[in-house]
Length: 422
Image 1 (cartoon, rainbow, N blue to C red):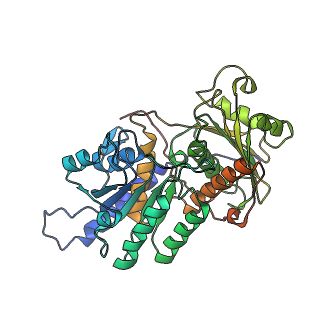
Image 2: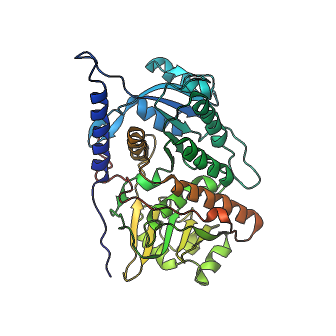
Image 3: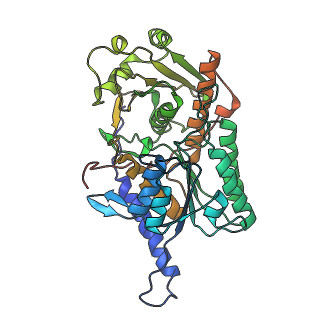
């Protein structure tokens, strides 16, 4: 059976949500004197570091300066009122940006939220990526996302109020800490969104598999530095999961995870543990593909092999010398050719893939409901943690923590249309 690809405009859906939010705000502000503009919802940013090209520069910076959407300057309907930066290196831009735009530069997390016993913001950005942090024996950067999240929770608990929180990238390098973060959001009843920009960027060709697509296998290839592989492998896992979660039955969890390097990657392909045909399909739509053969080019391939509980297989491949951009291919029961797409990541300094992520964060802050379940990011972060343990031990890893189940959304919020104009 041939499966049709959905092409509804997710950006339009987000715009409708935002308009409803603004309309409700205007209704609530009706008692105000005519001509008085109601205050915008207030946002606090808790960052690891605010320097050129950092994630805080790109996300919090878009809340300050705006960004281009549909050929026009779009200004988020929020006011960034306070910033806390965990580190202040010589190239720190935080003080300058705060002075220029009337933003308070706070001394701690609690202060950025309004004080230890109060909460006077309507949403929180937690952007703990980049900066000088230790790398543990598993090769994981020990970013203190969980620790800063705990400081946010203290304010929520004391104030008796909570607001939506966005966590950039994975919730924590430690899957147990990540699970506690999700549990706390459920306990206190606030919306929690996390994840990579990859699931919400443009796709060429456009691809949104319908829910209940009978995927048999999926693969994502990319190529970035191997020294600290978890940094980019997380993005690859998110790019894989946002497709395979749409399979028949939804997400039912993972049975086993295996990290392979070097010749073991090719040996696994020869043994049928991952599909070279899917790799070829993913490379076919990838504009950064190198000439020659992959096996002849790549000196030290890296792979994460995923065995889902329902029998579906997933693979992510880091092939530095063969490709740089991320692309996906998936085999579908009853379809002779794989589905395939390239994830469009416009290069820095603009890094317009952050436009896509910020647009979705705005929708989340407006509604309190993330555009996709936080369980997706809990699963990809847990997969990454188990994979790094697999690398260290030289064996496959299983565990109850991988049995994460959720239903994906009808529309996943990824942007369509022009990714250059503006």
